[in-house]
Image (cartoon, rainbow, N blue to C red; front, side, top):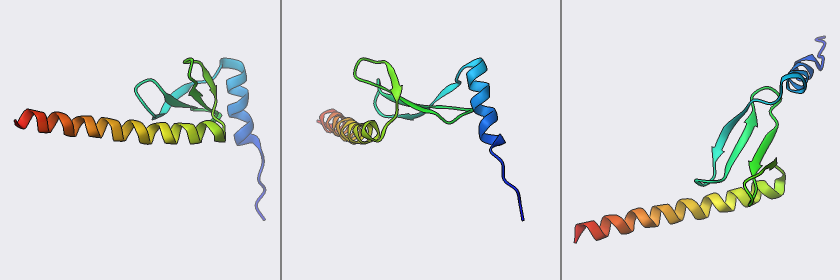
Length: 88
């Protein structure tokens, strides 16, 4: 029987408590909105409407998913529009 401990999850949290989080961009939602993840403790953050970092809750996940869908469709439409206007 194998014994499991909580040490692997405790050490990254302790590291972040001592030295601070090391956030990296995990997803670019739009040009201004991004999702961040800490390399050590896996804490997730996102930017709110004011540009401040806040914790990524299910509510903000849904908002970011919708925002990403709108952003990609808009950029795709603008690319198609510029291609058709350059042909004429």
